[in-house]
Length: 277
Image (cartoon, rainbow, N blue to C red; front, side):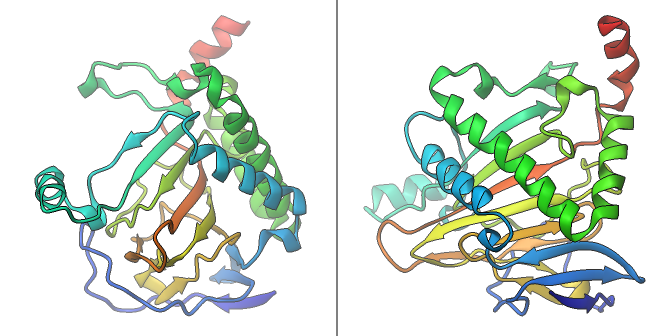
């Protein structure tokens, strides 16, 4: 595996800016080193480390694209806001279908009158069981890949989750949640809600599309998000975005299966222990 020492670069990118089209410069298996410490890695094809992970990613991708799994439709990126979407639809122009599905722990949102964390409502949908099972097993396989490549990161994240997240809000051992993003090219952002010191896992499934690559301007790094690729990275640490997704065939798409740890569950540890005790 190639090793890259990450070095900060000057840039004028700010949160909220649209991500421009960029050619990837991370295209082979790569270990990311910051100040002498490995903080993440990229794998071009997860089947080289775990065929089981590749098979589970295929199953999760297939289930997500079926009618069996609930989805939240998005109105951003290539199709624009709701007004732009309605205008293009009226003009008979093809719209890019965008949606996402969340599993696992969901943080409290007092502004939406949800004062306590919950488990995603998708878990109560019977037809989504195969998808949920595939995603949970894929999360566990991803953890084993992390343990193989950066064992110290695996142990660090496992301990942080143990210290910060009640068991009922955990998704496997290293995460609280999962989101599957279908055809979503994200503007530059920072995952400020994530548990500091931890990493996200992003597994890409795609067909008949170009673009959709994750880019981190602080290090001038753009990762080739090819089919079956896997990116492990601390998404709370640097501004990052996803380049525009372009179809090369009519039924083309790009889907990312993401596992991440939220940092807002720690204050519920004591109350959870009291209930279980």
